[in-house]
Image 1: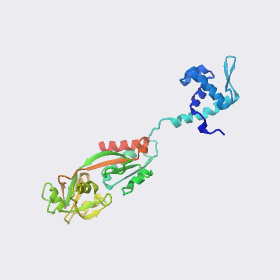
Image 2: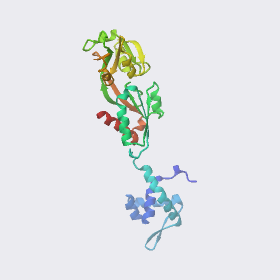
Image 3: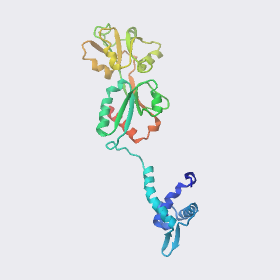
Image 4: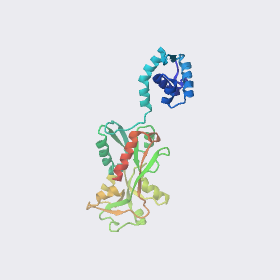
Amino acid sequence: MVHMERVDLNLLGPLSALLTERHVSRAAELAGMSQPAMSRALQRLRDTFGDELLVRAPGGYRLTPRAERIQHRLDAVVPRLETLFAPETFAPAEAAEAFRIAGTDYASVFVPALFQRVFSRSPRSTVDFGRWHDDIAEDIDHGRVDLLFHAAGKVSPGLRTEHLFDDPFMCVMARDHPLAGVRQPTLGDYLDAVHVVVGTVAGRQVAIDDLLDRHHRPRRAGLCVPFHSVAARAVPGTALIATLPRRFAVEHTADPALRVLPAPPGIAPLRYHMAWHPRLDDDPAQRWLRDTVREVLAG
């Protein structure tokens, strides 16, 4: 048995050309080689197969029986090799891709539009949207998640991260809250209040709490909830303040029981990102998915 590691695959091209043209000069032209280089390739092929392959005859060359059998096999193998090495493409209309996405509930402000775009263009594909958890980077590393939406900065130094957009924070409070009558609370008044904390990462609302911790001015948490959507609903009838990204907060501006104000100066906007494993950089389906995310957000 001949082991593949001992075979010079660079000889496949010259072999195919020689068996097709049955002439060294024409085979060299077909393969884009010089005639001396093709002659050397022919000699190496003869040594490899232990057969002359091409023999002189009146009017040109003739194939040996071994060469005829090789040519027959090449006719079946070469098209498959060409397919193997051809650039990959992704045709969404025909594809049946299984996309695996994860994120916090904040992603609900745009993922419904993303789902609609994906299914309108790739109706046979499927999407599994999973929740954020503290070990999400491990899921990405092991291929259980393809694309992550997050606001936690770098989830892992080994992942690709792309900034998608910023979203200013707003304060949602009861209509009769002591700060409800101001245009914008000061940072001091904000820190004196009691807060609903949306614990997206390890029980912390990292976009706010990490910033305040760096300035040694932590908030006082009266309630911790896992979802942004729950935070605002917990506020009526209490002295709590829920600090939510504007895309969530504006949903509550028409609620007569609530007041929505800009967050105090010093509370930086939420920076939202998508992240993926570098092994998916050049995957056509994953590139299409990321491009679709960009299109949705641009719209």
